[in-house]
Image 1 (cartoon, rainbow, N blue to C red):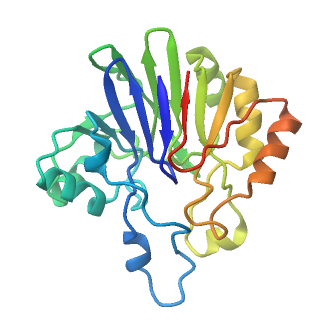
Image 2: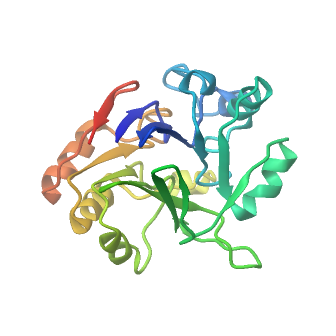
Image 3: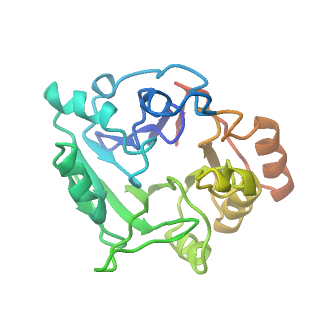
Length: 252
């Protein structure tokens, strides 16, 4: 498996001849749809396009605009892109409203593409949200190819039983948000994630080889996390952390 980072929660993961892109946010659509004086400003321009990444599968963790960005997705499909788009089942109607044909993903229902298997995992974005049919609105994903496993968290917070579930799944590497949450961001309707301290402790408890931080760079410093905090938290927890710059890759 080869993992390449493109900012926020956008990764290209190459495994078993399949190219997977997670939560592609490759525009400045959030910035342009905010009122004057908003703190939401990209720290750097979008580094690539979905067309250039040539995905076979696109995995969406939830419906927030910096994870499910129609301005990234629509031009790709309008230009003839053919990647299979997977979203949490309750998000399928929103995808249709955007003019996108999406496959429903549901917790613990594994699907396969070639030699790759994808297992959605129930995700809490501050808390677990379900629709009337008990389908989760937010998902993480475990990608398995041969003996190698990568866990993509998306936006997430911890809940009872998650650590034990992930320990049983035994990922080699975890891609985890680290920007945390606080009173002031929550009061301004910014829904937070696990902190760098929690991410490091989770990675240590699960027993991964190392973890890669996400959600720390695009909107730094308003909704990011300093690299020194990430490194210090990992050192305190006794776990290895690999901080990727945009465009940098790791090969398992």
